[in-house]
Image 1 (cartoon, one colour):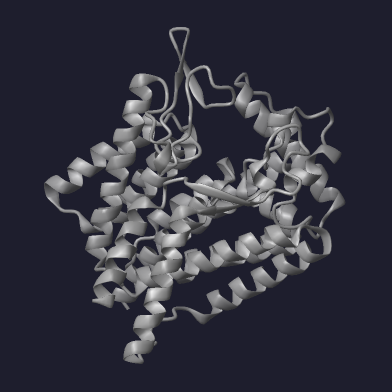
Image 2 (cartoon, rainbow, N blue to C red):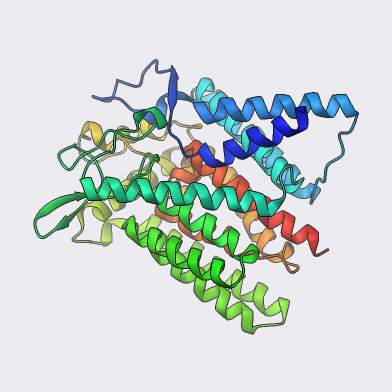
Length: 410
């Protein structure tokens, strides 16, 4: 009975983790910026409480049957993670807000739990895929109604944002002069919905056959482009291109080489933009704002090479902006690698890059690297994989699938 309840709750979590039902538990200085700043606020999400319940039930079940065996893959990865967290803790305790550090460590612990439950197949992996696909379908249906109505549906009880075409600072597109909201689902932004749909699609492909595969490829690819997320659309195309290319290549060394070349290009492009964002001019205002954030990020790094601490980017950014920032401009730089560099210093970024490059080279075998690689490639376009609870869950699930596929082929 306990084991059955455990599996039901775990499946429920996989379906509802995108629901943005939150409880504010720490907001000591969040209004200092002229309006509410979520990036220096401590939230607990309702799905996190469900995950905690699953973890407690799992512990009880393990004690009951005296079985704590589970696979720990690649010890060096755990060592790198430990070093990464030690660095984050030291930098934040010295320079930042230790309470925000506590929330970050909580989310990392949750990610480890999710990775553990995925790789030990608490539910059969095909069942997990079905649940994730069901969750993606729900988000798409909700997003379609939001788009059709041009405002939120009213499912605030599920964490849906209250949005409309007149709501300020809501992601919109212009259609023949009319402001049209982009679909959110129950996420905090359409870009996160797009990354969720992309990730679910890519990890599901090996477990789908014939009609089901074609159906979900059409639905989820369409969903990614429906969100109007330029980054997710572009990375989805790149992911499909790599899948086709790798299907023709049989030599693992060639595949590794191509992956490493792409990583080097990614690093070089990011390094160039980090140093030269002021030389780039886009007509699109949102992209120009991101370039301005890049400049702030560079100036902050020049003054804080060892990092400013977890969650402290928005605390510090006004000290490095060339103009007074409006309240809504207090946002983290939209690039995970820059944000890690600013918050955890050059040593934190180096640890992250060592892990990424080594995984890409060492952790190949027959398992698919494409879903994980897609997250690596989308990271320079936004910050949610680093500072949102949903982003870290996506990373944990994708890496869990990746590890599981590799272990099955060892």
